Length: 324
Ligand code: AHN
Ligand code: ZN
Image (cartoon, rainbow, N blue to C red; front, side, top):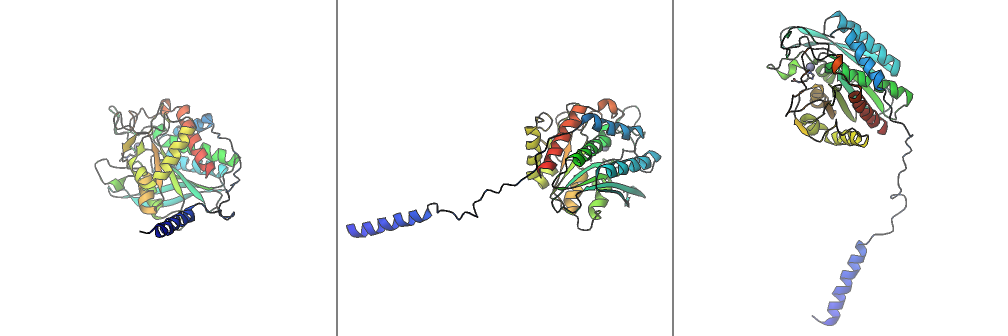
């Protein structure tokens, strides 16, 4: 090749490369969006949350169909009415899968109803009809301090705090009924009856939220919340967000970096039927005692409820909501 041709080719390459260099950008496309989010303080009163757990337990086991269940429903509706813009009970009915139906009372509180950016916070509030893992008394129900009341207590305290420091986001708090009537050797659909009902028939037609957080058994001392398999499958970015927030607040001792396998819980139906990415914060350790030795035994009482765990979960979920 002649020298002049080589120079022509060479200068062409240089010219082309120069074209790849950063252009001065038009100023509008590159502006840093300074979102003005109001500053807030992460606040969660563990004594208050503990009291909400105690008050549920004091009604007696919240077994569907019992007087204690009915009285607790009204208590929870009243509490949500105090802290939210609106509160009501969604009444329904579901087949138990063992012949017969059960009445469903899903208890709902709504903050910022007009906001389109929404988050769903949920927990089951019913008590299992029998503590069937108990050695001595497997046919009578436990107090359900952890299994049921703990998640509800934490969400009530979060609702109280959200009234003080209002979030940008809309918040829908749903206490699911009849989660815990399931048959371990039966169909998965014998569990989570209230969340199945709500997922098929939400309180608002075509209800959507950006994502959801389910709390289940969040009160035990040193509870470890494994990264649950269905949460990872359906709501992975939000699992990361919640676990990172927990770590930033110093709660990585509870929100451990450990994948614990799949658990059938209310969030499965919210994910599969309603299509809202929903994660479960649930005490679980596959290598140890699973859900904990208290699970479905009479040891599930107030002596197993620790304010420090309620606080770790409460602060984490509060911050996630306020950051939205
Ligand atoms: C099953 O045992 C199939 N799921 C556990 C869900 C549960 C029961 N959460 C509280 N009680
Ligand atoms: Zn249970």
